[in-house]
Structure formats: C-alpha cells, structure tokens
Image (tube, rainbow, N blue to C red; front, side, top):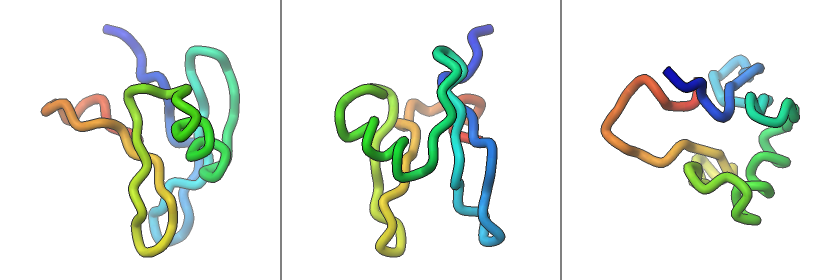
Length: 70
C-alpha cells in the first residue's frame, strides 16, 4: 500500500488543518505555503477551496475515504 503524499501535522482548535508534511520529499509546510504550492501546480492531486474566506488545501475526490488529508 502506498503512503499518502501529504499528511496533516497540526490543526487549529476549530479543526482547520494548519501544518502539513510532504511524505515524499520531507518538506514541512504551513497552510499558506501548501496553498501556494498547489496553485503553482506542484501537487496535482490536490486543489484549493475557499472555506469561510480562507484558502484551504483539499485532496481531489476519487471516491475513496482512505486517502483524504488527515
């Protein structure tokens, strides 16, 4: 079984994902940095949603529950 590309490493008190770790290259990213990397096209299996006015990284849906950010 392949490991997830990105793992959430920190959440806010409200449950918003704040920090992320790229399991392939070892990079740690804030939410803002991960959003920028997605927008630059560096994470093709992720996209950005505007949730309550905040740009939020999300994994692309594919019908499987076991590979979502988390």
